[in-house]
Length: 149
Image: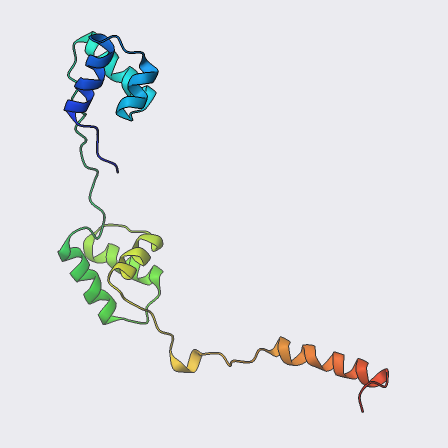
């Protein structure tokens, strides 16, 4: 999120319009602010409100926002490294009482630099069946036409 304009800049832009009588378009260009921001600041000034930016309340913390939660997830992943994400979600809910989605757990696992390696016996061969079968009809067709011997 970008930083709000400083109170000093806001006051100078409003003073340029109100006290010096500069047109809005010139103030927008001169101070590099948007037209909507200048309008909003002028409205606040007319109603007697402060030109200071609003303070925003932070939202709720994520499921794995604390170091303790990340450490607990790392321990859970260490305990069963080949577990599916859905199984880890269910285990997390049973342990902490907090339900998390598969996507949330996946992002947390990536943040921990946890990589899931498949077992060696489950790896596929490099050549696909379709590649081997696709080459044969071409050879047969070429032989029928007398191009190959």
